[in-house]
Amino acid sequence: MTDRSRKAIYYILALLIAIAGISLRVLYYSYARPFWNDESALAINLVSRSFSALWLPLDYEQFTPPLYAYFCKLCALFIQNKEYAFRLPALLFGIMSVPLFYLFSCKVIKNYAGRIFALMLFAFNYQLIYYSQELKQYSCDVFMFLAVLLSYFFIDKEKNDVKKLIALNLLFSLSFWFSYTAVFAVFILGLLCIRYGKKTLLSLFSLPFISGLLLIFYTKRFHTNAMLNDFWSGGFIEHNFSNIKNLINTNLIFYFSDFPSKLFIILLFITGIILLFKKFKNKEYQVVGVSFGFAIVLSYCGIYPLYLRTAIYILPLFFIILALPFEYSGVKNKLVTYFVAAFLFAHFFVCTFKTDYLQIIKKQYYTENTKELLELFVERSKPQDILIVPNLTGINFAYYKSFVNLSGRQIFVLKKQLFEYKDIKNAYDTLDKGRTYYILFTHSADKPYVYKNLCAYAEEHKNTEIFSDKNYNALIKFAK
Image (cartoon, rainbow, N blue to C red; front, side, top):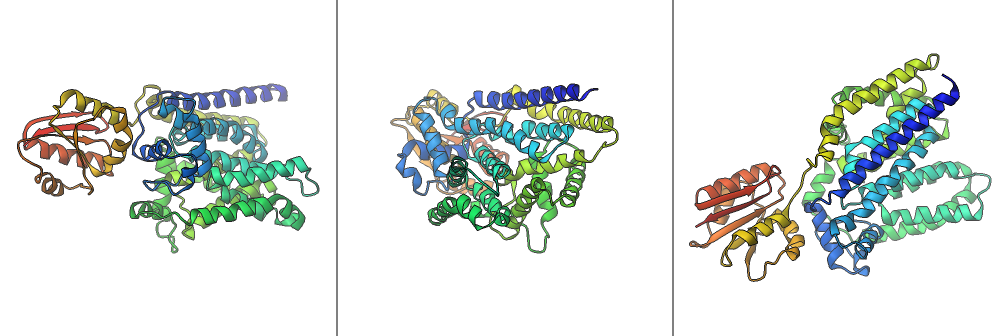
C-alpha cells in the first residue's frame, strides 16, 4: 500500500470516527431528558437569578464557573425549552472537544494507528458523550484543559507576535472563569515555559496571573457541605497509598464500565507511561507527563480529587498515554501495527455497542421524571389530598413545580433525609389520619432501597397505589 493510500484511509477513518462521536452527542442531547437532581439544582439558580447574581455563591451547593453559567442563561434567552437551552453549552463544548482532541493527539502521537485508537477512545467514551448533554460544566472542563495545553505548541520562545500574545493571554485568563480546572493547565504551561526566560513568562502569564488571583479571592467565599466533602475525599490519594487500588478500580469502572479487559487497559497504560518517560525530553511528551503527574500530585496533596466526573478533565491525556505503545509497535512491520489497531477497535466497539451505544439509540437512559409525576398527581388526586416530597426529591420538585398547576394543593417537603424503614415509619406515622397522601419520589442517595421502604410503608395502609418506572421514580398513594 502506498503512503498516499494509507494517508487517505487514515483521514477517512478519523473523519468517520469524529462524525460518529459528534452524532452520538447530538442524538443524546436531542432527547431533552428531564433534569435530574443535580441539574435541577443548577437550573433553579439560572432561572431565579439575574446575570449579576450568578457571581454570588450559588444555592444548593453548586460551584459552576460564572462565565459558564452566563453562557447557559444566555442560551435560555433564545431557546424556550430549558432542557435544550441550559444544556446547549455542554453540547457545543463536547462537539468542539472532538476535533480539538484530534489536533492535540497529532502533536503527541505520530503514528496513524495510535491517533485512530486515541480518537476512537475519546469520541466513543460514554462519559464524555453523557456529559456533553448534561447541565454541568464537565464537557467545558475537557475542552478548556485541551485548548490551553494545545496552545503550548504555538508558543515561540524566540518571538511571539502581538496578536498571538493577546490571544494566548485572553485564552488563559478567561478559561478560569469557564472551567476551574483550566487553572491547572495554565499553571502547568507556566512551569514548562520557565526555561524560556522571564520575558516570555511575563508576556504570556502576567494577565492570567492577575486573573488567577481574582479567582482565588472569588472562590474563597465558597463553602461545602458534609456530603460534598465526603464525595471529594474519595478521590484523594492517601499518603500511604492504601486506597490507590480502590481509586484506580473505581475510575476504571466509571470510564470503562462495559470494556471487559480492564487489566489490558492497565497494561497499556503502564507501557505508555514507560514510553512517556523514555522519551521525556520531547516537549510533546513533557506536556502530557507533567499534566498527568500534576493531577496525581493535586490528589495526593488533598487539593483536587482524581475521582469520577471531577477527574474528567484529565481523561484525554489518559487516552493519549494508552495510545503511545502504537508509536513503537510494528516499526519494522507496519502490518502488525494495523492488525493490533483493528483488533483493539473491534474489541472496544463490540463490547460497548451492545450496551452504551444501544442505550443511547434506544433511549434506555436514566431519568427522573418529576414533571410527569406531578402531572399524574394533579390528574389522579383530589384537591384535599396531600403531596409529600421527601428531602432529596425536594430540589427536583423546587424546579419543576412551576411547570405544573399546583395552586391550592397542600404540599409537605420533608426536611430530614430518611432511608431506613423505621425512620420512615416514625416520621410518616405523625401524619393526620383520615387523609389521602401521595409521595413524590424521584431522587435518593440509595434509590432502590428507599423506594422499597416507602412502598412497604404505603402497603401497610389502605387504598395503596404505586405508579413507578424502571428507574424507581414513583408516585406512591396511600390513605390513613
